[in-house]
Length: 159
Image 1 (cartoon, rainbow, N blue to C red):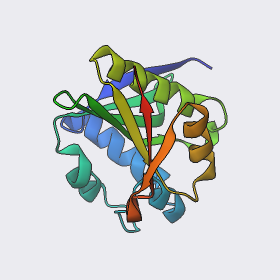
Image 2: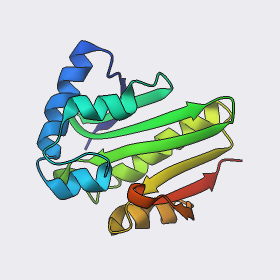
Image 3: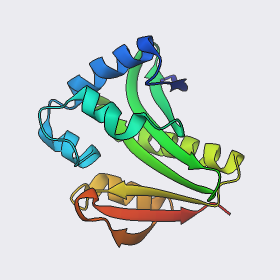
Image 4: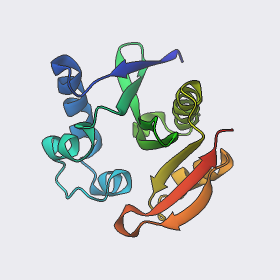
């Protein structure tokens, strides 16, 4: 399996159309949507997704591709003032799970954060999302606090 990570932008019309198509398909299952962003109601609304998170210019977005097919996404917010990074919306197409791709994306996001001298990275996870929680803990994230409807916030030092 030849997998590569490419940068995308919600502000680029071509990328936006691809993202809208794949996310709408992936989030046909309300559980997947709730585990990814509990602020959104079912059915998935792409414009609301963008409005809630991707208007911020500090968000960097990436896709995992096998050949020309998008099979996963990952995003990160880099706050250069606080040296704090926040990974979000890491999602792998269900047909490609359990192949190390979530790990690959998170490692990529961590490396990006380290490259711009971030000292901490955090991520939110729903407590019922056991596979994601297990992955994040395996990668060294520690539970920091409960964020109410946002689930648990986990954090990891990058120094």
